[in-house]
Length: 210
Image 1 (tube, helix red, strand yellow):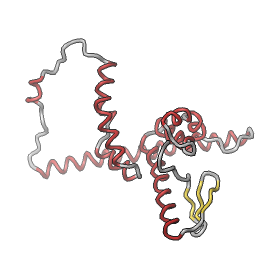
Image 2: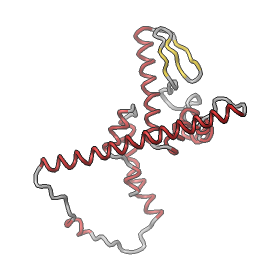
Image 3: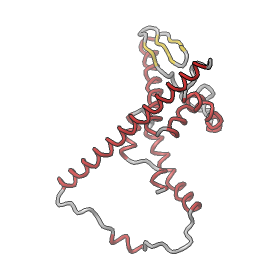
């Protein structure tokens, strides 16, 4: 169970990369997490007695008895649809919850004279020390704190979705500067492309970390 939670499933891997997450980073992190998860699980719950499962039990593992390939494909497709539907519903719920909390905090903050207070604002300050220790660029620490808060308090899909927006924003900005050499400027946390009047919401992340 520890190894399963420390690694990543193929379906989740595909969905996160579709959000813009670097697949090489996800794959490397998943592989490196496997021995670390085994070590941590052994430290937290050491084996003090013989396991009920014997090595010879590996030869008697029960397998699914599909009558043919089409039946196996049909059952697999049905299970996949249920998994995807669960992921989509969870995303809708968590995104709605975050939006509700943000709206409530902004409303209460406005009543007491603190404009722009939101859930992500709290997360950016709460996780600032952690992002500093992780070595992110100073210009990205508050933004990465927001993403860490969303990932921890909501779920990883919502966090990676917001992260993917920043990745795609950098791609759009680089293509804009390379193709038209146009000017751009910051407007709060957003970037405005002057020539096309396009807004890159949330800004961008720096290419490397210090």
